[in-house]
Image (cartoon, rainbow, N blue to C red; front, side):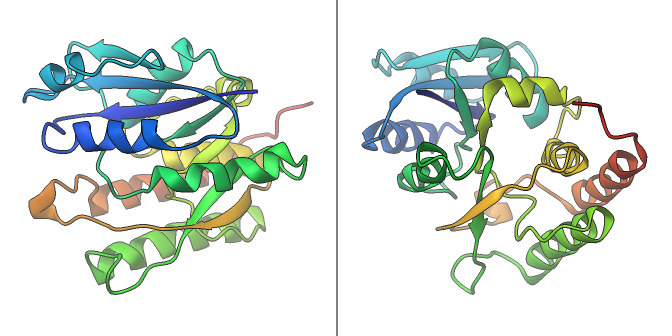
Length: 231
């Protein structure tokens, strides 16, 4: 088995070196590739990426910023692994948790695995961010009669071909809701494992806003009303 780690990057000059170092230092239970999509960064991100020398790393560049969903779509199109997982470059997630996501797959217990964040005073930058996440997740559970704990988690691990078959079109953060909605519509229930998390604040470059939450709710409603695809 080979795992493709997909990292969308936009203006992360201060963090990208540490993010790559951490991701490549993990002892994975399988072969990996790290696909970084520089999504039209206007700072020194490209220069930092050019200095990294590791055979497992591949960099793809968007000429203009297109959004997280578009960056992941590009990465998936170039992925050579059997499975994929998304890892943001903002250091909020710990790549040391990725082997924990892989364990249920390697044991034959799951096909899709989500990392479930536990929010606390040290791991969430605002009350309203946590409430927004819980609200969107609750909406998905009500609409699809499921019980997932964290819809907006970055850590979504699944077969590359499964993600491609979802045909995710959302270009921005709405891709999180679209992926989950399409999985639940197919009656695919993600297996969840607890992960560590440390949110950054606006002053550190946090990009998601309340508008993304509203978009997520609209996407979930849209996916719920669509006909379930035939096997």
